[in-house]
Length: 208
Image (cartoon, rainbow, N blue to C red; front, side, top):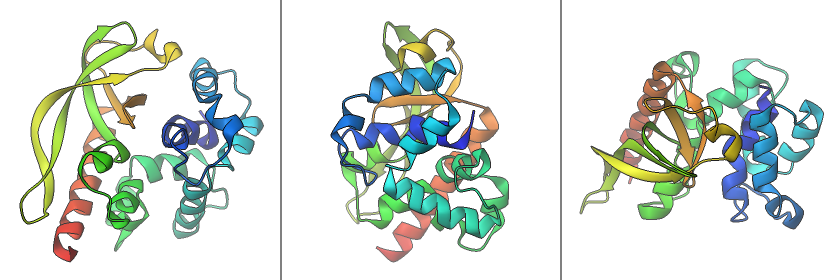
């Protein structure tokens, strides 16, 4: 899967709410169809890049990340995957966490239920019921002093694109964003995502 195609899986959900820098009504009206084309493997890479370029916030941040990593193409799969999930390379860089998607969420002062939707999160499939999927996922909580942390593992209900639903299995690790599953991920990617998020929480708590 190309980086532009991957970006669509993660960033189209918030685009429906006119977030991620997109105010395109034509894009918002076709999000479900576009995502299913990506999962079916039939959306051409060039067309995906045209659509992804409308997601101005994600594209801008991927350009900055590509420059940091010394990669010419901001739509490379390595750059986009690192932006949304993270990578061992970025984790080792001083303040590398600031280039992760989840840093941008808390950096804007978003918290509470809005932040829980905005943050890229990982979960494990426990039950399938049509297009509603139950996942086990660590909760995110704010205490009375406005400090954020992971909480206990809890069961959440999330939506899933039709094409992905045909292939996903009980026990799979997945990432999700704005209440919808983006893709299946490995357990290593799940650990990297949670490690980045925990580091971002630490930074937020020290500076809030």
